[in-house]
Length: 176
Image (cartoon, rainbow, N blue to C red; front, side):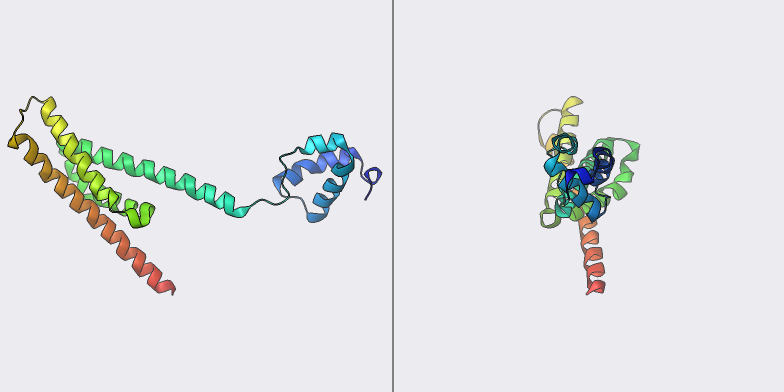
């Protein structure tokens, strides 16, 4: 097809459709043929145009964004749970910590064990820091009670991960 067969106005009307990936194959070919011989339309189409969108890259980008949002939500939930330990709302952690464990299992797959360990470490450090901030002195009374909360929260988080693992196993079992 020659440049004079397609007016520049028609090509310029089709370029946004081609860029968005909603144009038919014939329209795409028409625009590509025209832009091969017309420098002004080639400039309008731009160098960044790719005829085919790589679906795997788009899906990988979406998965990566969802994983980042999930990790931020996981971190926020764990931090919230640790911070409310010293308030009357601490019993919400019986729901929050297993949910964090389940989310950690689903997000981190084989590295899910990092979540209970991180929860335990964060809880222990927060409790020790809080006790020091309230004027507690160094000794067994400072170091042992925070360990109690850390172990409980680690167990609750591991319980949530176990529940998520069992659900994952059960649902995968039904698909095969």
